[in-house]
Amino acid sequence: ARVTNCAAYHFVEEKHEQPHMTTNPGFTPCDGSPTIHVNVRTIRDDDDRKREIQRMWKEHSIETKRAEEKRDKKHEEPNQKLVGETVYNLAPVTTYEYDVVACADYVSDEGCWVRNMPEEIKSANPNFVPT
Image 1 (tube, helix red, strand yellow):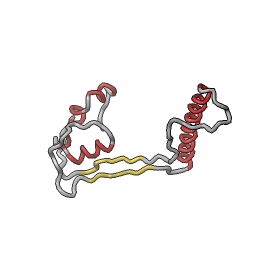
Image 2: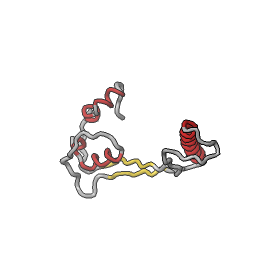
Image 3: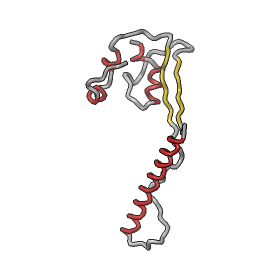
Image 4: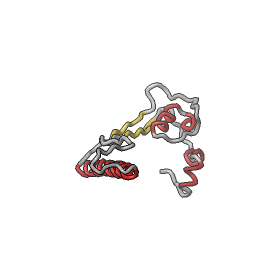
C-alpha cells in the first residue's frame, strides 16, 4: 500500500508526533494531492476559556507551592520574594491537527492499518477496529 511509504502521510504523522511505518518514505504523491486539512484550535467558547484559566491557575499554584517548599527548606524569611524553578506558560494553548482527507494516488488495501500498526499501539488497544 502506498500509504505505508507515503511522504505526505509521513509528514502528517510527524506533526502528530506519532511513529510512522517507515523512517524514509519513498513514495511522493502527484502534484496537488493529497488534500490535508489543518485544524487550529484555541479557546472557542466560555467553557474553553474557563478550562484554560483553571489550567493557568493550577500551573501557578503548583509552581508557588514548589517555591514555598524550597524557601522553607532553606529557612528563608516567609515575606521574601518567591522565585520558582520552572518558567510556566500562562498563554492559552493552541493545538494543530493535520488530517489527510483525500489523495488522487490512494489505493485501497483492506486491513492495511491493522497490519502496519506499531506493536505498542496494538498492545495498548487489542480490540481496536479501524473505522
